[in-house]
Image (cartoon, rainbow, N blue to C red; front, side, top):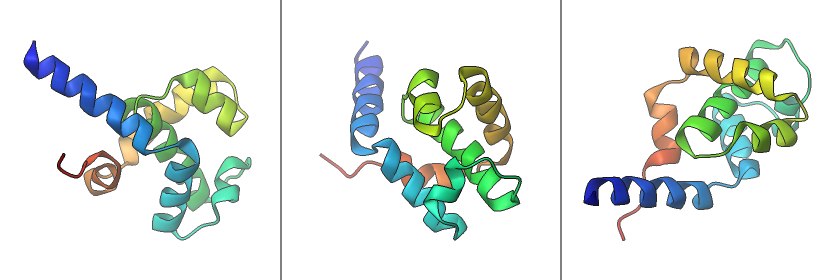
Length: 105
């Protein structure tokens, strides 16, 4: 039970430490694209890949709901579910670590 409490604390701490806007900005910085281009409908590979990574990291690693991410991106829930599935295929562990490593304390 203690282990689950620690996991939940970590999950909520990450959620609060990373507002969606900051996640978007950080991923854009990593990919060297403009953050606003990620939210646009685009087939540019870098922007499209960032959107997929954004959905995966936000929902699966930081605890945002599909509904929250869909509102932020301006897309439907099923679209976000697809983005999550595709993001899981392309996101690198080093990219995830930028969002999931908490400082001690």
